[in-house]
Image 1 (cartoon, rainbow, N blue to C red):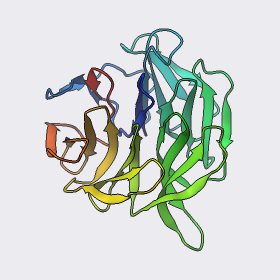
Image 2 (image 1 turned 180 degrees about the vertical axis):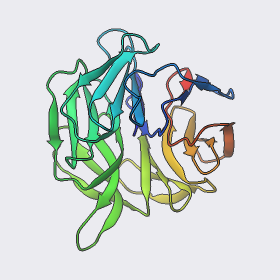
Image 3 (image 1 turned 90 degrees about the horizontal axis):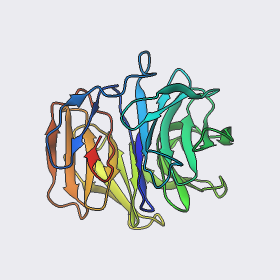
Length: 271
């Protein structure tokens, strides 16, 4: 599943979690497992996304995917949970938000879906005809997702499309085995599970550096804010961190995580 934090800035990030207990705390502080959101996650691996007050119509909210079907919603403190906020999904995986819409990956349909932030206007096949889907991210102009493209060439890539679903580029950035993907105002980042690296490229797909940060242990998710890059080292139960220029790498920035598959950041916390 995926988790994403939508911030007041033009960027949003998407990463993955495989466990309902999330790591939550102030940036730069070692964190403990905090089971502060349980609704709708009993039978499924959960992905959550957090919408800031700047992009949500009222107080901040949490949205999550239940792989057995449905998008859930709750207040940021975990109260007022609605596990069936959006129904009719098929294997929903990655989830991300911008100022107007929620986007998620319908793994079973092979499509990216979309709805308004209040749960109306659901389009389960907003962007259909896709193959294996893993991570998803959004900025002011484009959607980005990672996945596998089947066919004669059979390759993995970071794909891109316009926010209206047009101009799909399935091989926008070729990669070995990309999973989590994130974007800020200048770059796209992805976690490569096979190479143990965090890749980076310019927003136009140029300047590709598949080994921007190396030494990660089975990285799954990746997130970025205005100061740092974070990724999940699921192979060693830790969260990694580095400066935006790739320096100051700490592969064990946060330890004690139970099989972390992803993470996200907002203005105050790492999740």
